[in-house]
Image (cartoon, rainbow, N blue to C red; front, side, top):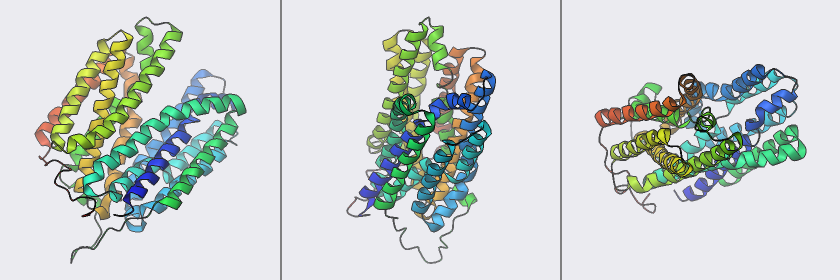
Length: 404
């Protein structure tokens, strides 16, 4: 475990740089589609939605399979492959001539990429048992902060050098992340296996681990609620009576508060897991998330909305890191790739269907989007409280770094 801290820096930096590179250009995809000759607003929205959605959809299907390959040949090779593919995809997107070119490139990226889930798996596998929650939380924090920085940089680049050149800069950013991983990350040793242990864990065996399927459902539900804000928040604020300009500024502030507080929640999970069981941390954080989300739905003032969405973000971040840590703790190291592949599939599917569900509910009532999210969180609380096997505090009984 001597190299685990350097590995942590490598995967955290790769996550931050990769997510920054992605969000430098993707928020402006609709404008790029227009530059490629699509003029109808409906067609622009359709091509943009399909292009953005195809990658997580394909990645969700492929994640467990790539995880199996990672368990056999090492995750570093897979991460380098994913980052290299992102370099090529961004470079080709800079030279796209038709909207369908973008769709095909993003579909190919879904088949071979998936660096975000890989970095979480690699952080969990490299870290000593008593540092797993902190390692996962740190990577998730980087994945939260990167998207807060990327659009600002991308907006400046798009205005200064144009969108095509911004895609090339994004490719260069991915190349930087690739070099970091190649130079800094050392594949950890799984360790000696006990006699009679084959070293191969089937998909069915992984799903049979204690609480694993339940935690997949928790992660799926959390992503459905967390990602429901995107399509409706601007509409919600406008419906409250704010002017178009005021609403745009306020929504930017609220999304920033949500991201920063969720990152703080990712870090808070490790401290809570040192003092309470995983079930208690998940249930407690989800009760806070449900109550603050319901309060947000009823709030109208700027400060009340900011405080409630911040508390919601911190609680969701805590619950998400705790769920990943709890699942990682029951999966043997030789099966981490497959295990985290399934967890990533649950996360990606939740992220993919959330905007669709949010839009359908918002067509009836925008406020109900948030209230139904609070109701879903309470359902998860009941499910966890009744079905999750009790586990001791995840950190305090684990071996120290030196002992590991």
